[in-house]
Length: 150
Image (tube, rainbow, N blue to C red):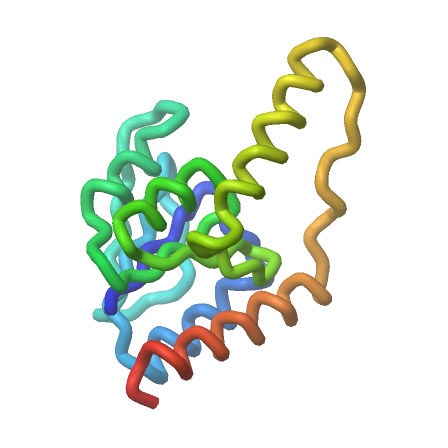
């Protein structure tokens, strides 16, 4: 299993959590973004900066991801594309996307987008906080325990 990080919106609170798991389990990891970011220096981590554009990083991740890989992203359409390739996706708040729930998340996302496009004011997500980081850490550990030889 390899890991891919949708890096453009990756929260700073999660960087040390992810870095420790990469090093502990020796997971080959690719951080893909539109600008240079770092989660830590390691021979296991490759940083790939793609062209500027709305879906450039997403398209690059989808092109590289294979069955069984893990993608960390808050982008629901990207998670849907990854799951369709029989890979896994976890969001920054610890939600594990699956074939059982991704279509529901996508439908809600699309509905909210249509509501916003119609001019309706909607609330955005709550600010990312330590509780979310803890939920992510728990879900990542649970996932890695199941899919990696620990």
